[in-house]
Image (cartoon, rainbow, N blue to C red; front, side):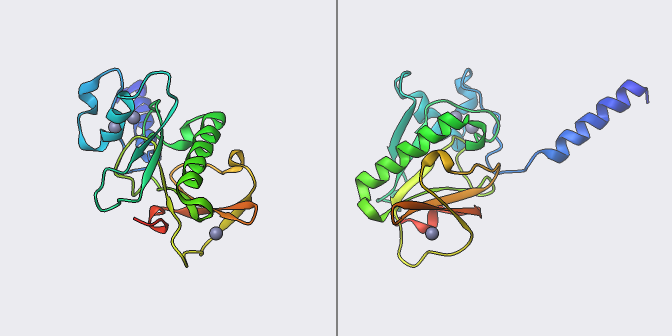
Length: 183
Ligand SMILES: [Zn+2]
Ligand SMILES: [Zn+2]
Ligand SMILES: [Zn+2]
């Protein structure tokens, strides 16, 4: 094998090893609508249907088994896994602020928001679940914050947030998080 080929093969192997396998690893491309025809890109199609000047939008959860749920989404598509982590800090803070605002509007002090980890998401487009926090779910690791701009972002991880006095808990390091919210 020529030296160049050997280097190329090594590069491919390294890349394959660093990709985090996720159900929504998606090759969809907003410039090519046909690439967004598959089931896991349903929220990408919803985003495309929004007015172009709308940076963030809300959808009622389409699942009839989750009649109390809403979603907050950015209109823009980010590449790969559409991770919140891949959206810039300002865009991410704006999305969390909007999601929390909508959650408060719907559920007052009982609000909760949740972002599922990459391993369990079934839709590629970034989305935050909005709902009513269930009783008795307080458990696990959390950080206390006072502003959505302080919400941490770690690739692949899910998190859920609820009010605690005048501040908020951000529960971190989980995958399935939306189950803390009323369906
Ligand atoms: Zn997709
Ligand atoms: Zn998308
Ligand atoms: Zn908590």
